[in-house]
Length: 353
Image 1 (cartoon, rainbow, N blue to C red):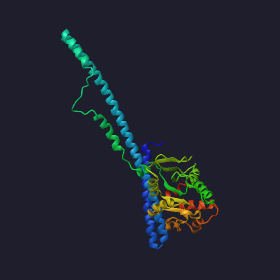
Image 2: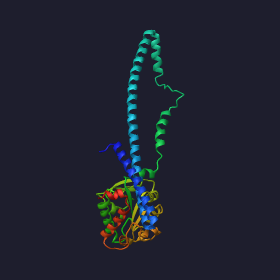
Image 3: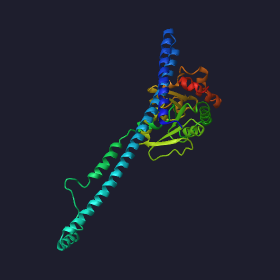
Image 4: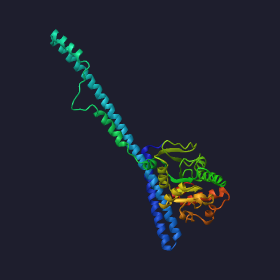
């Protein structure tokens, strides 16, 4: 397994490559504009945006590794200091014990019999007394112990999510908790299988840990891509695939964050909640791919973003038409994955070859 330093060096090289790709896409967009090719310019800018998302993901991983390296260094320093303190404590204890013994011997040699008896009697009378230093409150140590955890307790749930999601373009799955159309489940199964076959090492799948659409999609990703299920505190997805992140205060917070962290959103059926997440994603420029034929929010209901229902520049007319028709699920799934491949950074697409 590569060392931490080697992984940091690799990430630095990949970040440099991502910057170069972004500059190339910027130049391509300018060239298309000069030629009057608006569609080509939009495609280049879209690829630049996905490359930027990829770069951001790499930066997060780079920052996480740096924190890990710093924590390991602090741990080693703490262990070394503890060892030094233990050695000093042992030495002081030994010296203190010897000093006490010498003092007692000296006192006994220099005391009269009456003095010794008086001292012993005084000890018996005062055995229940407790010596208190008025300058140091009794709870000072407790206050010091509590101060450090309290300072570390403040954290942001979105930052925590960003830190635990693996690197890669993030594909979020939106959909209802049950299937209302008999065509929808076979379509979701086909989508998951095609994503697993074509994108297993290129993307990360995010779900809300819900039954229905999200559970079906996650089950199809047992061989990849990695799946992260995001839930409110105290809840579990009970999915056989993926890992749960259950740190949100409630469902409302989970929905709000879910619409802010993905790069690509695939929606199937759905109601107002799906529409809300799709709107949040579309408004900030994320790609939203609605399976229009499944109806519900994905079919344009519940104020689903109208712009997401229009053919984007990275999709062919033939592929986009499949999203509106209840035809062959496998053909529709291939069309969706083709659209995703069209917007993945060149580095990611090249990994397929």
